[in-house]
Length: 131
Image 1 (cartoon, rainbow, N blue to C red):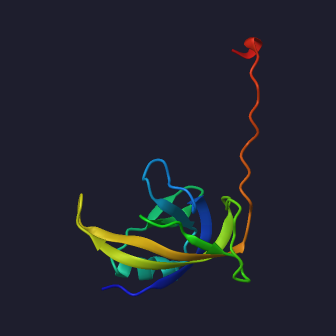
Image 2 (spheres, one colour; image 1 turned 45 degrees about the vertical axis):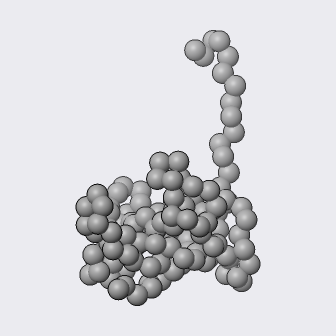
């Protein structure tokens, strides 16, 4: 049985109120993890990834429920959280066995301490000349 842990991190690819199209889960990448957080996660068997632009990161997921997201004053956040926001995620590691054995990271709650609102890039019309 694993205990709940709090992870302070940069937030990327936040699917907090809608499911990710690839995994069909609510999820967020917790990026640029501190050495202490990396050590804690690896000690319980969570695989920590490293990628250019994200540093060391993990993906925290919720299968059935949207991720409860609040600001520093505990007020619900209703806008989309953009890449580069910062926050503290309350996570619960869990064991899984398929398709192979490992430890996943469930997420119960997210407090956003530095919000960057996601804004979709404007759609541009293409003319026949650019095709």
